Length: 137
Image (cartoon, rainbow, N blue to C red):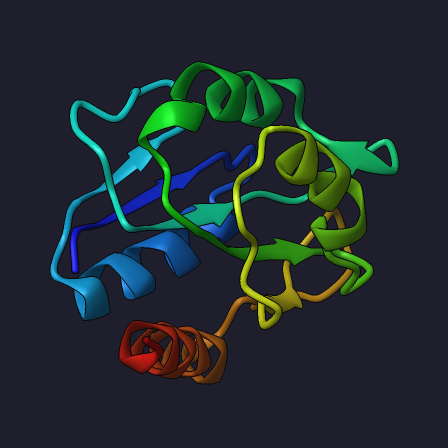
């Protein structure tokens, strides 16, 4: 299955999880600033909530690459543990890009909160998430 990993990370938290997912998928992780050069069956897309919504560059990436994306699996980190799923689903629906029902979200450090996160257990859980998604038909 042709797979790609793209992410947006301000603090490095989501990048750490992207690295673990990309390793499991045997691809190189790239930021959302790097467009897809060929169609992918599965895109692992990582980001966090910023001001209660997704980062605009994530939406711009999806719009620019919609015709090259088969399906999206979301992952991310956040200080609150909340996901981007409810914010990104309407955009993905409008772009007619299927979204995996499962996602991966873990805590990320922010200022003085969640020190040490994502930790080794979070990284291992992200790899397990990727492995399970890759096994899906």
